[in-house]
Length: 398
Ligand code: ARG
Image 1 (cartoon, protein in one colour):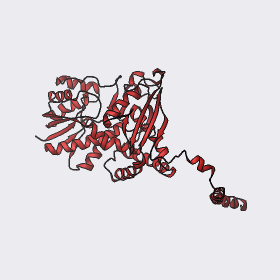
Image 2 (image 1 turned 60 degrees about the vertical axis):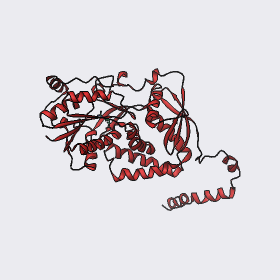
Image 3 (image 1 turned 180 degrees about the horizontal axis):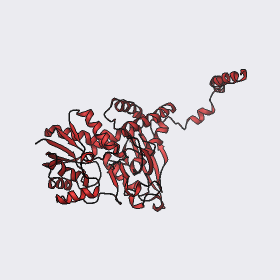
Image 4 (image 1 turned 90 degrees about the vertical axis):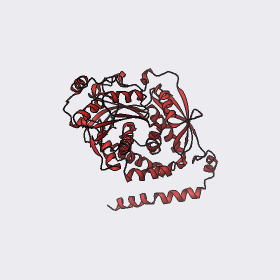
């Protein structure tokens, strides 16, 4: 029998997909479950997959790789999509695609499968990633093919096959949650109506800013070449640092976003995000960059942060464009080292101080400024004003 490697999340859809691929499509199914910091019991996921009929289950802890090869690049770039989405879901799909390909090659599988629906961006990210890495692998998207029209029909099928029903996922309400160490995406269900505020139970990584402590907390982050290396003075592995920062900042209501987003596929959707650590790291890094990067570098980097975000969002991770942008940001971040203190208070992470050996801001210059040669200043202003004078003259002629 042909083999198919399925990206298995442990949710209802990929559980049903195991049975469906086996029964309707005659595959030997290898289930692949990856830990990207979603804080679930992954060993248990493996057992659930085997009980559902997978011939084997692989469970992999990819938190460090996720940070090092994906999240770190986005952080160097301060990449974002439409300002407030820091790309947690979008960054994870190319890594899962890479793992699907690797496992398929190891297992001699001809097919890979994923549990994305036919409306979202994730299907595009998976399939574009696989097309770039292993164009000959065939891809199956059961949710785009199978006959079950809704959740109820899938539950019925799962019950008829006596599949262990998955425990409700991390989320607090009935809707789509996608969680990893970089943040959580929450969509559909009660949130589809953009005229209604998200119920408080939608959020699971952060407290409401309204209910956050009245006492602010201070955190100190040290960056080396654009990446965090210590939290409050303690050197830490990056995935651990982010997990700790998620709880510190989440406790102060930081990192919530509620946006109307433009999907790649062309329509708008209402999306809720939580990214306490990512939001805090962006604020800190931006504060440090103001001190260590030139005005021109800052201006160019802002435009390229948008380009980077669009590239990630649109599933073009394995592209020359993304690689080229990485080269730019790797070089630019060589000077982004130093310490930043932030105040976490009722939904805001505010920079309160920064120090850096790479600083372009020198307090000593105030003395220098006093002595700034007044002739040089006059000369600079005269030349700077020349284009304006030329325009004024032309206006006068008209
Ligand atoms: N709209 C976001 C994106 O396209 C979030 C996707 C969340 N994925 C999910 N399977 N719930 O990146």
